[in-house]
Image (cartoon, rainbow, N blue to C red; front, top):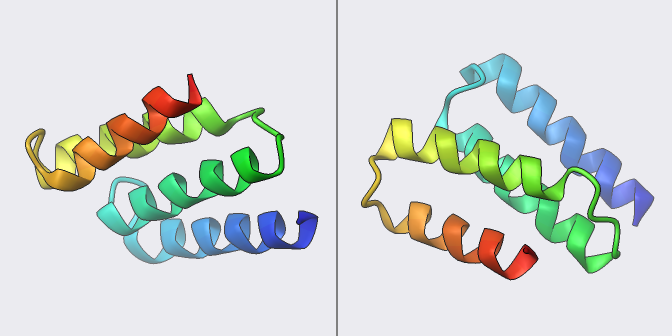
Length: 79
């Protein structure tokens, strides 16, 4: 699973360079990373990643977008 986490973080870095740090594609990467961390019981950083994804989604997609709801739900399950 460490290899999967490295790959997920690499995708995040690539997308941040390609799209900027406030793009909805980056938010998707940030949403997926904590799911991977949660699956391996390594929750350090998971909450922060969900919260960053949520902030980006609200700014780029609007607060009523269904992806915002999905991220809120995932964050609630983590907590």
